[in-house]
Length: 148
Image 1 (tube, one colour):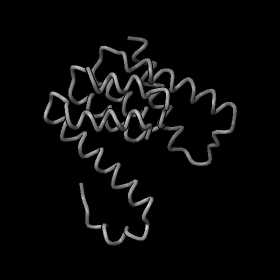
Image 2 (tube, helix red, strand yellow; image 1 turned 90 degrees about the vertical axis):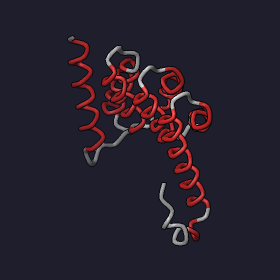
Image 3 (tube, one colour; image 1 turned 30 degrees about the horizontal axis):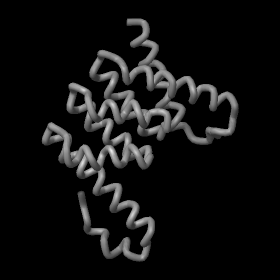
């Protein structure tokens, strides 16, 4: 119970740190806190609490944690909660690691749950669309009507 309370406090601190303006990641104090927050979020992915797993997966995607790629891939592949799988797919796309993006692509084709497949497909198509727009900015206005 104490661990859960501490983890929620850390999650709250994380949202405060990320949303605050003027924070420089080059500051050693901020780097130390970031490392602690990342470590606690990674630990939370292994929790039995479904809501905690989902929120940790979401925030790891928000902070773009490269250390979270493999645990999120495991969550996407084998979690019993389909909501956690969907959030893991979203976070892997946000992190933008090639292995994670490939896992989301494969999940869109072969996941055993239809909702996870649909959402993974949307995330992956949105990712591809964003990459195309970044490479071809002159086509952005022509494709502004495209929605996923």
